[in-house]
Length: 117
Image (cartoon, rainbow, N blue to C red; front, side, top):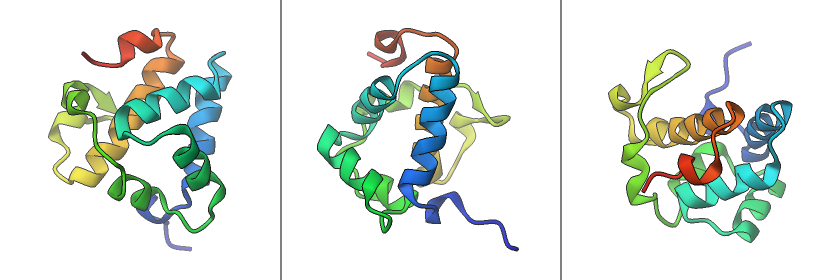
């Protein structure tokens, strides 16, 4: 069976994984939602709609985001062994930004410190 690209996976399925990662470390879905809103410019209703719509792919969620936070470029470091600064594909970089934010949340960092700026 071929490996499914993250871009093509349903948003809800991937988002569930991010929420689970945070919750395993005692954090909440509300915190993941807050970081997602900060990064993408979506509001809570938009995120909930994308989550419940099986036709919204993870890639489309990022392609259609209202506005990438201008401070997102301050997100540095490695995710899955790859330095974010070295990712050339803009869509993959945006996806990895959210991964990094959730990783920092799961490691116990305060939400206000995770938000750059």
